[in-house]
Length: 130
Image 1 (cartoon, rainbow, N blue to C red):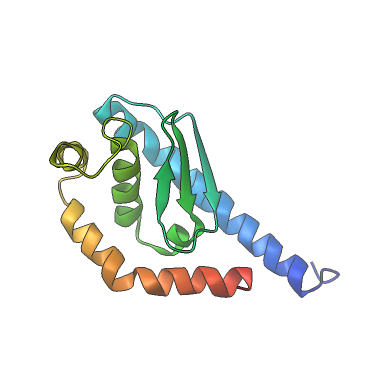
Image 2: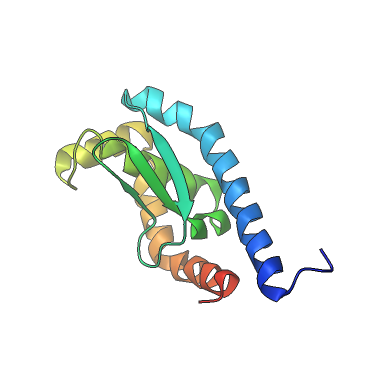
């Protein structure tokens, strides 16, 4: 560790944080996929500037590294939200019904993302050097 330059140490921290978030996702995902009757094919953790996650039509989910700074309840909401897109690709009433079925407190977590999300994105930016 002492031999690594600043960028190398930063990269190690980013990797460790991403790995820890991935472990949390993998532990929490089965509950949501079972409840929604869907499956994510792959989950990637990456630096995202303006989104918390995305879901492709073929089940590839991407999540923002910034979620590593969020409470686990917020992560659960984002997982439910992204997985619900496998049923509904939009944000229609039907989409929100899927989210609510899996995560009834979704409104509270959406508000938390608005209230506190900028700070988590800022921590992500500071960490990756952007």
